[in-house]
Length: 434
Image 1 (cartoon, one colour):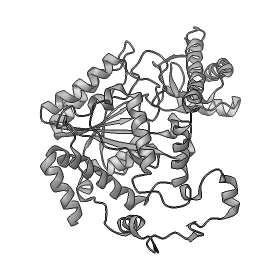
Image 2 (cartoon, rainbow, N blue to C red; image 1 turned 180 degrees about the vertical axis):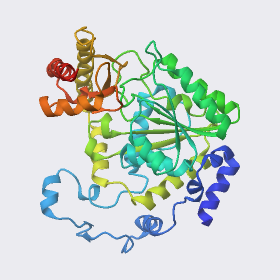
Image 3 (cartoon, one colour; image 1 turned 45 degrees about the vertical axis):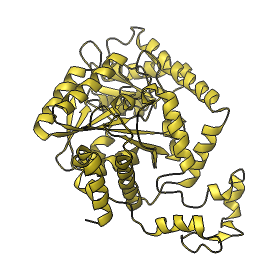
Image 4 (cartoon, rainbow, N blue to C red; image 1 turned 90 degrees about the horizontal axis):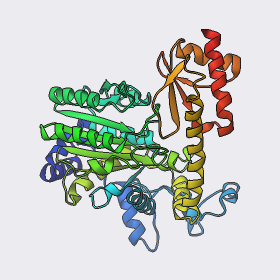
């Protein structure tokens, strides 16, 4: 083991031994090297005459660039576009995102958590967490309505065993009891579990009520009190898109500093929150289970996360970080974001209005939805994959089949006035096949 990794592990052993136990074998071996990046950072502060450290080309006191590119980006200073960004992300962006989290998540106020580390969007954040905390055979607790990429990231790549529970009760609420039973079974079997809470949920478009959210947190705390280590991940990719009665903040704030055997990990990003999918700008934030500022633990986790970023991709793109900083600093940001939120809310509510008309009741039911980008139909008479292909071939309509009965509809990308026709065409497709 590298001495730097051993040093970080010793710090964790002293200040939060349960977090050390949660790390995967790879996680225990991770460190951030004191190599080129560290030496270059030192040179940036002190090399006032010549800085011959890092591998970029310079010209006229700044980064070298091609005019055919800079002409398209002329409103940005070349120093904020072309050089490498720091491995943990631009400090200004990290600070602005932390402020945003506190503003939008009242339960995080007064809690102790790390500075957000910039990731190459949410999928990269999931990969970082899997590398740091998941060993082959570890249990990952997920609802049966889940984003399929979790299977690839945690299962195929890291060897986790996915333990699913029913997402909804027969009455249409989130099935907290099923979650609790699955969690307790894994806790008793393994002594360590990884819980992934994705709200608003993809594919169902559901976010729990406040009472359901509190019950999920209580269930996690209960198994921790029973001696199980819990890595509690909140995938907040669609954060903020809450249209009806539900939680209006991430569960990360309630999980942070809750119990020494709980490590809360928040994954979020500008990707969907600020409608900049191609920017690929996300964040990972840690909070341990102590109700005081545990700087050595946060430092160790940050260094290990930076180590895996350095190993896999070196650092995240600089231009998109600059663009997000400019957006967060803009006086028009909140107003413009609210305008887009209202459009999204209008589409969600129109979808629900159309589905509640009764005209499609013989063909499908729909799962509860109150947030996010999606909703799911539960088909009664036809196979979802057959319907998906038929809709494409005959009507030019695209949807996603997630199971034999479930068809995911992204109302996020359908204009409100087109939603009635969309469901009419899906209904015609069902009638054709039936």
